[in-house]
Length: 99
Image (cartoon, rainbow, N blue to C red):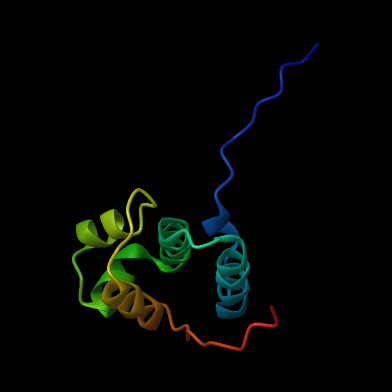
């Protein structure tokens, strides 16, 4: 029997347009269940798709601090989240809950 070779799936390789990035972030926001680190990781995926160096520059952060903030291992400050969302060319919005 032939052995199957697999590679690690990287969502950032599939986020090509702003619309795809926005849809991915929206889906992650719905699934996060209050987990800020999960959202940070999703933003990290989008930042890698766009180019971490450019996102860091546009957000006014060092590349290293951006990697740490968006690693998913901790929850970055809200100011960092807002800077990154802006640097990614995305908008954060709110709507009324129907619960």
